[in-house]
Figure 1 (cartoon, rainbow, N blue to C red):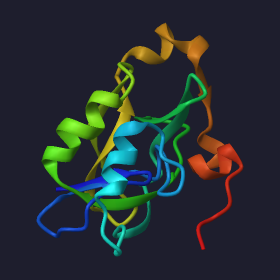
Figure 2 (figure 1 turned 90 degrees about the vertical axis):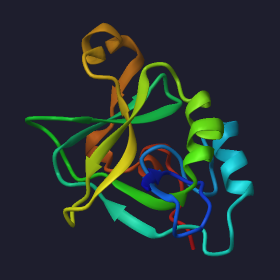
Figure 3 (figure 1 turned 180 degrees about the vertical axis):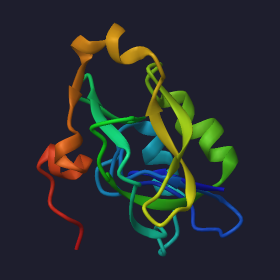
Figure 4 (figure 1 turned 90 degrees about the horizontal axis):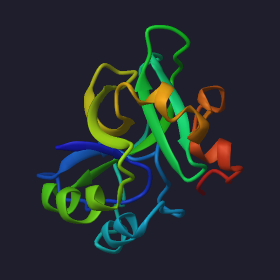
Length: 151
């Protein structure tokens, strides 16, 4: 399964692709679960840089966690990195560390593929507005955090 993780993953092709670039980056993991997954990674760290379809808003939750949300208007293409991650690692190492405001979902990439990514739980934008910073215009977690692009 393919998942977008912003920085961690194993490199076995039988794993799940996950978009991570929206959450952390390979050199700046968000939480311990990311660190454990990164420690298991092989040399071919990920599947490469990707961009979502231009229909997502992007938030910083509490200044610490990135989160996508599907938007009918005001969405943009958000940059990330795609990694192959074992489903067991997603279940045991990644999801238990995620904030309760976030959940795993399926997002559309600019090239039309569907992959897993972490998103803000639907319906929470209004109820936790004081914890959210809309960073959609930044286009990536790296840019929002002022981090350099990987070499």
